[in-house]
Image (cartoon, rainbow, N blue to C red; front, top):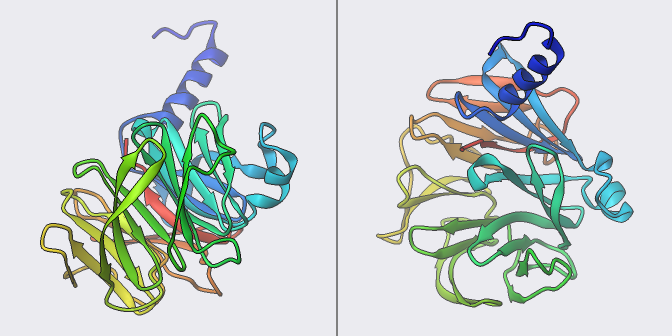
Length: 293
């Protein structure tokens, strides 16, 4: 495109292409009241190239209580709908869906000590409410009716959720168990299976490349769950340590993960196969996710 006399317009298009382009490796980082999108390839050394930021404190379309209090500790962020939207959850008590392009909040709901969120077919959203007097459960919402809880099921220290589109099943991770649910009706889930995890303090639950395995972390380490064989095992090269907060892998094999440095947070997002590390000195980072389009 010729940009003579319209340099400002071209610069705007270039910025948009940089932030929302489909090529190259990108990853999401969440912590405090923010979610960041980082361009892995354009980052230099350990300095991240941040191309997009959503700060709940600046989200004018959120009610005041949500904006100022309920998104203070962001703990999960996932790209959905081809990277056009981001799922977010906060242990301060809320979940949301945010458009990437205009940062509009298209859904929000109160969830006690929310630790994960998943988009399901039929306009449904599932949330994991962790340890709290009103939590320890899975909650189900419809995007069109954000204030109404459609369904709940007790799950102590609910921490992870993954929708498996291939099997049409929702996997949920609690303190000591991994569960499998199916959609029983437009407003309810049905528990199908439950497995004891090899440890306690279940935390991270993420799909592994290939569609037949799940990454599961607990207090003492990281595991791979074979969905077909219904077995947990270790995998060579898998980042394995105490209290791994987030863990994911690209089809190419590269891992992304976070491990606390102080209390529950870290200032670094780490990678392996190949190794790399980015520093976020002004942010209490909780999780990081590959941004898959």
